[in-house]
Amino acid sequence: MSDSSNSNKSNSPARSMAELMARSGNNLQVLTKGQAITGTIKKLTPEEILMDIGGKGDALVIEFDRQNLENLLSILKVGDKVTATVISPESEEGFPVLSLRRMLDDVIFKKFEDLSKSDKPFEVTLGEATRGGYFAETSEGVRGFLPSSQLLDTTDMTGKKIEVKIIELDRSKKRVVFSQKAVSMLMNIDELKKLFKTGDRVTAVVVNVTPYGLFVSVAKDGNTAEGFIHISEIAYERVENLASKFNVGDKLDVEVVEVDASNKRVNLSVKRTQKDKFAEVEEKYKPETKVKGRVIETKTRGVTVELEEGVNGFIPADKIPSGTTYEAGQMVNAEVVEIDRRRRLVVVSPVLKAVPIGYR
Image: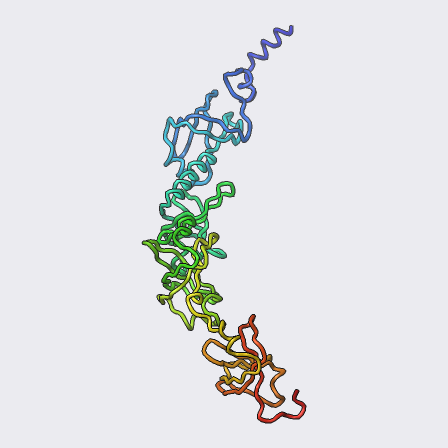
């Protein structure tokens, strides 16, 4: 009875692909969702991609993204052996459904790795602008990020095609960062460190003026690199409104401060190429020394006077007699009180022709 029952069961139609595979023993493989399986491309058209995975019947490759489908059609041919991922072990029609997206990612990221190592430029199309830059898309449909700081043109670039290089590639995070500057400028950190040493004197050309510093280009031994001069490295004295002092195209003598690995550029200084006049201030302006200066700024906390070019004096508000006012351009006789090294000022007190009542 048992043998007859088993015989009837084995002769009955299989109710699923899994059951059919199970009955076939080792000849057919039972698939599971997410499994990687190797097969051969049997049919390759825009309407249908079929794979022979060694089972009864073919497996269907599904790719809903049009760009990914076009990429698959361009890189594959019938007869290619590829590894797919199982989306569904069995569809309603009874055949397995696979995806080649992971394989496609492998191919594309391998190409990016090769491009990154070879340092070759390639074309991308700039998409919508976002905070800090643009999303950019390659011909393979892979999106990366192009920071505004890595653009040569600061106008609206949406929709434009430009050549870029890869400056960051992190496959685990699926992060690709492009740079337009890298096409014409050296941005390899090891090469930059070999080329630019701290203390080197070079000539820089201003390419952009910002409120916080100057972006410049520096050339050496046939290579051009991006440089940056922070506003604090412009001069020893306080500097404001860089746009009123510098223009694009200006040539500056600068000194290398360091190679900035995070920004792939060279940090530079103008002031380090010049003599710091304040270094001699303590010797020249000793306490009780009589000085004369021209008022250049008046504020509630005190009055700033220019004692000589590059050296300013400061009269604190509590040293100004009641009822006394100062105007820009006015000459003032004063006496040195102390040196304020932090603010790079000579603190002075006005010399009074007559001591007002109540003045201390």
